[in-house]
Figure (tube, rainbow, N blue to C red):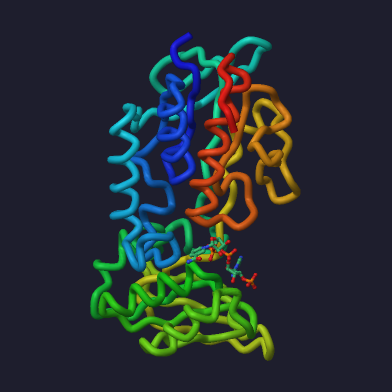
Length: 305
Ligand code: NAP
């Protein structure tokens, strides 16, 4: 066996699973197809992770990664492509090679949901973005649109405003989904909010030039000149690996687990945003810790908890 435990995904859940597993004496490997940190790393500002009144997602991600690397190494840039589960082991096929392990924690998180409107795909990277932290600085002094009414959209709009942009947020309903604290701050910093508004089309030859907005109450249409569109309308579970092996999912595609983060398949655990629910960094960390220690039950180790 190459490793006792494979952790798939290096966000807060995977990082915490790595810390707890190795400290419990489990030989573990963490695979991340990118550079780690997950959606946490591109969050402009985090204000509700205990111990940090305010910290950028990238800074918190770096701290967590350094913490994991105190105990174990991480295979960055190695994508897990296939799992094959048998009674005694799990075979993992990655972009590099095959491994045999005793248990797997799926901590693959979520990806950004797309609007699916004309112009979105064509102009992605040419003014259409899903990450204010990554792309915001390119739009300094310009007029940008944020789409969405949840916490992420509000946080992104505030961050873009603070970076020096003229920011308009469009939300399809008349009430935001975001917590009141973010709505209040958005108003304070001068984010212009358009309610009952749907983004119908993103226009531009090679870069974003304008958007077509539809008022959902009276059906009126207007075109607005804009340099950037930041889409922040929620996330979709990255559940491909889970689906492949028949892990039970809920109606929205999130993995169903019991309170010890067990899936319906022996040797397969799940943690973090991929399990749905509250989807906070603090809950992802907690689930990662639980999954790591629960996996001892199939590894012939007994963890006293
Ligand atoms: P979210 O809470 O699911 O909100 C998505 C927003 O996008 C909603 O306002 C939704 O509108 C809108 N939307 C969805 N599909 C749309 C479409 N096709 N066209 C236009 N608008 C659309 O997603 P999120 O803000 O990314 O947050 C994800 C999770 O992370 C949530 O659980 C959130 O609480 C959590 N989070 C927490 C924090 C924090 O606590 N500080 C920060 C960031 C994220 P409706 O409202 O009309 O449905």
